Length: 271
Image (cartoon, rainbow, N blue to C red; front, side, top):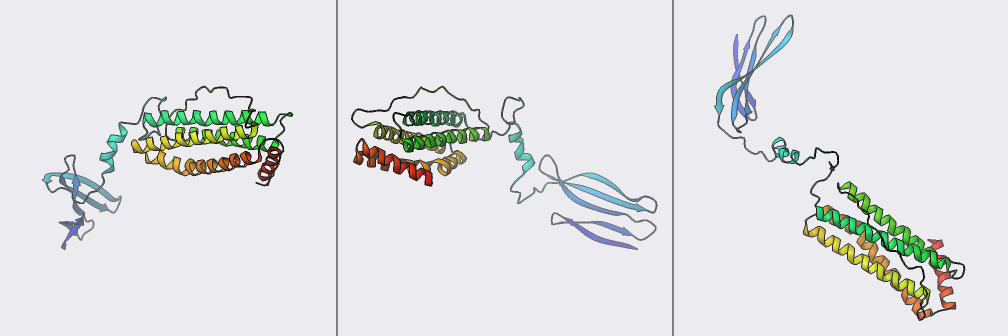
């Protein structure tokens, strides 16, 4: 008994199925296959079961070519990935993770790392000054010590980001900060707070320039990193230091500074 049916692959009918009822039967089915030119060729698959060995498969391609192109193909990963394969480095000194990360971004990140470390260095020097026995403003000393640690953490965040994007961290030299902060007119506390406020505004300007550069080179990831991790916190730091400067201008030098230091120390301990 012969029974003809049609077999469909890729929504295209190919009437070539043959079932034969006897001790062994064969099934053959033709389906399209895309060749290197993007055309369709006929392929025949035949499976013949036997009592001894089970199914056996034979695959053969016909010489006839179907010139109908494949439609509705949006993404051909094996074709498009060829471009990316050309950019994977083969030398061990180059990063494998680097992707769409420009040299301009890499240099700018290293510059910002240096900025954060320099600000941290200045704050650490301020901490050492106010912690002296003949100055003894423990609240202000603790404030600048915590600020130094925070700026160093910011530098490390940029270092981690540099490594994550496949860049190379380059640490530059830093200038030695001042060790004396006493001012004949303003006093040491007000002068140090005004200096800190100026540093935070300068750092905010550097971050905004970095964000602007990221937008210019269309590095969305870097722009989002700066917005999420730094810009809001920077504005809050500027606001806090502005209040400290305003309060120190009101209390003047002497006992007023001691009272401000006590208030600041209690706030930091409570926090």
